[in-house]
Amino acid sequence: MIAAPEYAIANFAATAELRATSAELTFNPPPAWYDLETSAAHGAMASRVLLRAEMPPAMFVSNVVVQYFTLGDIEPVRLSVLDTSLDITALPHATVIGHTVDRDGYFCTDDGVYTAQDTELRVRRAQLAYRTPTGQSALTIFTATTTVSAAETVQSEIREMEDQWLTTTINGDS
Image 1 (cartoon, one colour):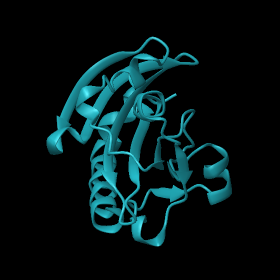
Image 2 (cartoon, helix red, strand yellow):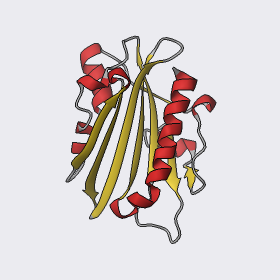
Image 3 (tube, rainbow, N blue to C red):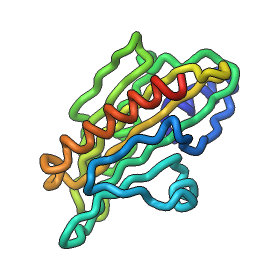
Image 4 (cartoon, rainbow, N blue to C red):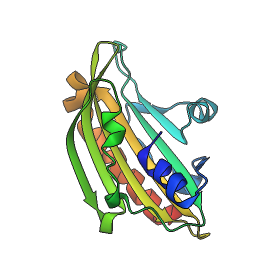
């Protein structure tokens, strides 16, 4: 499980409900990226999944997973009180290479590397806790995964999407 929703459930009896992406929360990815079908994204427990088209096709497809959770009538989770890097260390052969907290403790990012099926992967996870216009506590998570060898190539595209995700969430859902 993801540390922040688990914390909210265990400590505040929250109910984590995955939400679909709304028009207000949609951002345009860079040209090489495309959306996975909505039903497939929801089946993968994601609000939205973006994949990077590459030629020739890569053994591992760089991807971005966006999740929007409502947590009920509780205060937004102050992410700074959690060790959100546990989300990275739970991965096989993982090493955390960065952790930052911002926005008074309600926004954090974790960077790391791990190995899956003999492939070295780079992961970046950003999380924002906030209150929706209807007063619900919410958490949104942006997770980008790529191979270590492709990380330099796609890093600027991932940061661009992360910035758009954060802006659309702040302007469209909080």
